[in-house]
Length: 332
Ligand code: ATP
Ligand code: MG
Image (cartoon, rainbow, N blue to C red; front, top):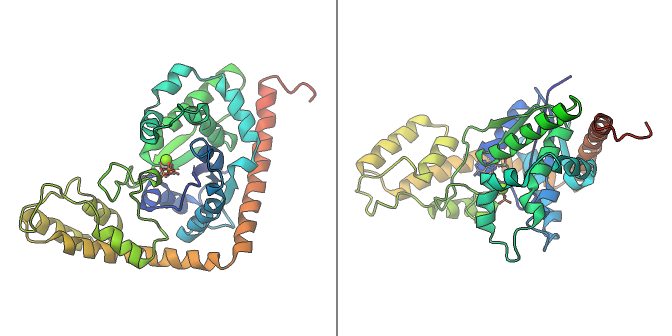
C-alpha cells in the first residue's frame, strides 16, 4: 500500500508564511511520494469559534485556494472537509475512553492556547479534548506521516499513544503516525511573538497583495535593543532575519546584511526593504495561481467535493475494521 500523509488546517482565516514553512512546503514536496489527505478542520475550528460559526464558510474556500496556490495538485491530493466525514466523530468517541483526564490536562500546546484565548465561560470540553479528535483525523486515514508545525508535536504524541493503546487492547488495525516538522519549526510573528498565528494577528498571508506586504514588513518588530542604525544589532532572534533566512534565496545578500547589521552599518529600513523584495518575489507566483483558481469557483467546489468523497470512503473502511476489532460489529 502507498504510504499516506494526513495533515490539515483550521479554516479560521487565510494561510500565512508560518503555515508555509511549517507544513505546506513539505506537503507540496511529498505529494507525489505519498497518498495525501489534507483536512480542512472545521470541526476543530468550531471548538473555539462556536459562537460565530458563520466565519468558517468563506474560510473553507480561502484555505482551499491557498492550497492550490502553493502548488498542491488537485489530481493527486485529497482536500477534505472534516465535518463532511462524520465517521471522524464516531472514532473520536471511541478514542475518548483510551485517554485520561490527567493526560489531556498535561498537553502543553492546549494549555498555552487556553491561556491565549481567555474563554469567558470556562474552557469548552470540545476545545480541551481536541487532541483526541485530531488523533481520529490522523488515524482514520491510516496516515504514516503528519507534516506539522512544532506546536502540534504533543498532538502527534497523543495520537501515537492512542494507537498503541487501541492496537494492544483490541486488534492491530491502526497505524502509529510520525510527525514531520518543517524547515522552520515555528516561524515567529511580525510582532516578535514566538509564533505567527491567525489568533495573534501577527501574520503575513500568502495572499497579501504587494501594498499590504510592504506595510507589514516595514512595521515589523526588529531588535528592541537597537535605537540608532549605527548601533551594533542582534541578528539572532530578530524576526526580520529569520524571515530573510527562510524566504530570501540570495544567501550572499543575507550574509552581507547580517554582517553589516552586527557592525551597525545598515539600518532596519534597508534590511526590511530587501526582505520585502524577496518576499514579494516568493509570493508573486502564489498570488497568480490563487487568482486563476479564484476565477473558477465551480472547479474549486468540485475539487473539495471530490476530495471529501474519496476520503470518506477510506474513513468508512477504517471504521468497519475498528468496529470489528472492538467486537461491536454485532450484525456483520
Ligand atoms: P489558529 O490561530 O486558528 O490556531 P494558526 O495560525 O495557529 O491558526 P493552524 O490552522 O492552527 O494555524 O495550524 C495549521 C498548521 O500550521 C499546523 O501544523 C501548525 O503547526 C502549522 N503552523 C501554524 N503556524 C505556524 C508557525 N508560525 N510556524 C510553523 N508552523 C505553523
Ligand atoms: Mg493553531
